[in-house]
Image 1 (tube, rainbow, N blue to C red):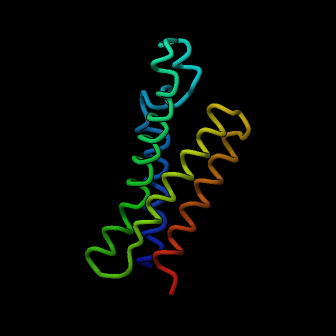
Image 2: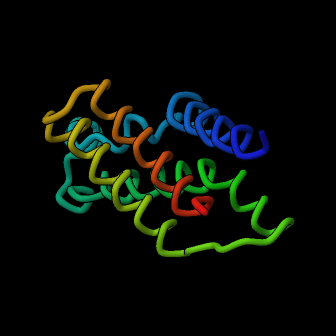
Length: 125
């Protein structure tokens, strides 16, 4: 039961961060926003920082429940999993927001696969 609660907490934190907490980053991670609002070459790649910041926030939130569990009750924690989740989230969001190669359903399925893989890496026995 405790593992089920951790998994649904990870999914809940995904929903909160990906839909409610993005705020301005939802616009800023789109290259087109910078082209319209800050067309100077100085800001040409700033969308990448917004993608990174959102991806970091999402990874932190999604991994919060399992991280707390490992800190309190012991277990293995793999910092590389944190880093890989940031990278995968950035690539996925860029494919949706900028390259327009995937839709929202595909984007969310990839994120749910990330959650499942993270859960399995941290808790598979």
